[in-house]
Image (cartoon, rainbow, N blue to C red; front, side, top):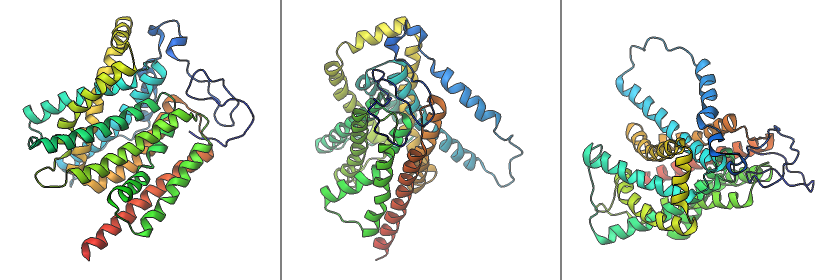
Length: 382
């Protein structure tokens, strides 16, 4: 994740396989060669070979389940299952994206995101139209459709930048940067809505910025382009939340997250597919050729697109079974869990300074959440 930066004149080891390796103070593990440096696609490292040993080690230390407590209920079990599914889908899609884009050698982040959006569109239609998981909310006007399209464009920018950054950065550092979302949310809310928060809210953002500065300066796999893409993804996610609160405010235009995804995903896919054909020429025949050479890629892409939808579904279910505040707390913990899991699986080097910076950022996010909660409570009571 991070390491004390020393100006030695040598090139730092990064996610870009073309950079030369440098001696690091942290864990010295050689980088994984890209797919184009291997004899054939068949020899690509299996994603299951990376993750199965970690899962087996975790299960071997897991305590055996005893008899259920007398007061336990099916709702408690359902809530625990939903939270576990939320963690699995959020961390799983990150690890699969990293594996495909950085280790396997599938260099098409825009097309991969287009597959995610097409999958979300199809699965959302099945969930709402056939399974009726939530009541269907149709688009009521052209104005509302235009607003959804604007959100879809911002969503495309955020997701594409996030996926593309995984080509250059480890998941652990990606999550450290992503934890600064509250900082960008506060900035956009102030700039767009001119809404000022109490000073305690802005003071709580200082450790968020301080932590990511420490993490960036000591990250052994730091890559400038990857860092900028990750910042773009984080700021885009914050901008979408602010714009969504502005555009879909009236009762007739408010949509729950599942209906918003169903209407927004086809628009996002329609934006991303031509963009992919333009910026990633030959992506369709190249993908077809890779699948012919290695059918395992088709399974990876299908699983990746399916888990991408499960991220959105479990977000909705966690909020339904618990609360939006619980989802926020879980989100704070998810960044740390995802970083730890990625280090155990991909073995990217970490340093004490980097872990410290990440920890400071997480503490700042928690302080920010508490400050905003107190601000809302005081404003509602007055």
